[in-house]
Structures are given as structure tokens and as C-alpha cells.
Image (cartoon, rainbow, N blue to C red; front, top):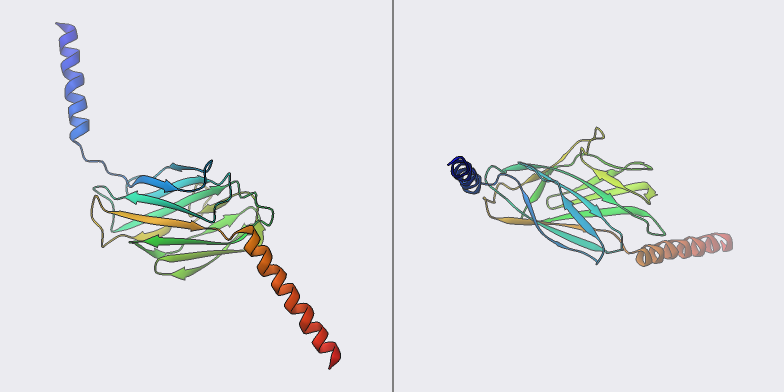
Length: 193
């Protein structure tokens, strides 16, 4: 008889939990290079993830689903890890689909804070010293300020995506090489005058 009461109580508890609506933004899919890992730490009203970029990928897309209780504004913070590219990361873009940035918070690398720009669906982070290890975006426990994502046009069950765009080391080297060549030509032209 005692076992029957425990089973009944357990079944009722599970039934209540299953019927209760989920109330957290959910990471539903990640498109990235093999070996890269995204861990979702999102909570009610907050998008939060840890993206481990073990292998270079110029663009990683994370798709989130809104649940009951989320919005119209969501806090956003993240950690991007293992930025062990030979040239480091001096420039990073975050591009939203089906949502926009309401405000920008902080972004910090081991070399110091980044400069934030952009608007609408795009946030751009520039570092004066290329970052080779980690970047923290928003308040991830280090005293930063969260970014804010506007999802007012979405309802529970709708999805939005965030693309993390990192320039390819080869294209960055090509741009730097081109700038060096242009400066050399300019100096030569100045000497002839």
C-alpha cells in the first residue's frame, strides 16, 4: 500500500511538471564546424551560451526558440572560447535574424575591452589588440553589461537566429598584406615627388 502511494505521488508530480509551460529561451540548433561546441545557459528572459571554437569556422549559426514568459526584450551574454587563430581575432560580427539588438553592452577580451558598433540586427565588436583566447560578451559574471535583444514581434514557439561571424585568417592576412602594399606604393610615390 505504501509503495502504491509513492508511485501515485511520483506520477502526479511528473504530470504537473510535464503540464507546466517551459519558461526559458531554448537553443534548438547549432550550425558550425565539426568539433565546435555550443552549450546553452539560457534562462527566462535571457539568451546565454558558451561557444567553444576548437576549429575555425567563419560563421556559426545558433537558433533559439522563445518559450512562455520570454520577451519582448531578452538579455544576452556569451563566452567565445579557444580563439587560437594564428592572427587572432580583431573583428567579430553578431547578426540576428528575426530579431534586433535593442542595446549593446560590453565585450571584453584578455587584451581589454572591445569597441561596440552597429545597429538593428548587427552588432560589431572591434579589438585594438587581436584576441587569441576568449571573448566575454555581456555580463558573464565579470561585471560586464548585458546586451539586449528585441523579440517584440515574436511569440512563444517562434524562433530567431544569431550568426557569429569571424573573419577568415587568410582573408585577414590578405587585407593586411594589401594595406602594407598600398602603404609601400604611397611611400615610393612620395619619395619621387
